[in-house]
Length: 341
Image 1 (cartoon, rainbow, N blue to C red):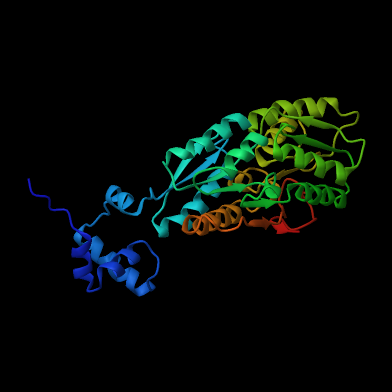
Image 2 (tube, helix red, strand yellow):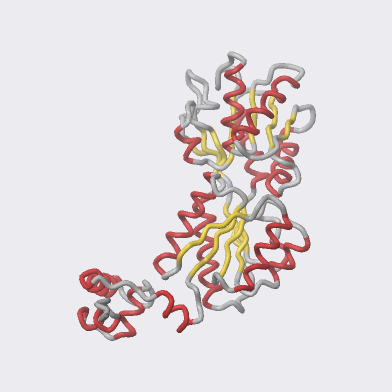
């Protein structure tokens, strides 16, 4: 049988440029926008598709980057994944989404598996860390970029944010609205975000506030823990700070079960500024931790390391920002919904 598959040489001839220029243009690097458009138009006209296996063998690369998280259904990670893909795809990389599991041991095992060479690098956002995970990242055969603050001091490239400071912004916002009986709904305290957000709440709210810990960072866990939080408070709460948007939505359901309203009876804040929080009713006041910006920055770090794995580790920080919406703004007057603080 004779193959009719178009070749790279045919694309180059159709576009009227060199073979090297054609290759660069198809990968979106080292070529002008006009050249890229011209070459890709020729490729589409001929029905050309790259020989991924041959390319990988020639260049000794898989052109795959793993994105590994504990919960691939969490909307925060979905936003990060989109941003990572948008940065990497023009450079010819595919994003492979993986789950780390919820323990530092399972995460370390996954990082260790990088030695098998199935990807050219990994962007990872671990919930829990320990010495073994740090060691596996430092000794990994391919570059690893961490989204999270816990490993900044260990010579590992990372993109982090100040979630403790973000919780402080939420607490100060509620106090400015006159809320004084503020409860805190956190996720597991043995996780990096749980620890940071607990510190942030205690620093901003002081003592004497009721706190409840959910078993994980999901809506269902938030509903269960919020019921306990509301029942345990010595006086009826007038505000709840939740450690993420999913917990906040669970808290709003628990408040409604008691026949109370949000925000008139109890104001609620979340964290992560996810799409689900923006369309929920009432729309959710939330602290944005720049999920898209962190994903984009991690992908850009990965591109640099994929080109030169010997580069020094770099740390990038994305600041938190409070987005005020309907779950804290009083029905009459108050701050403009959707406002930034």
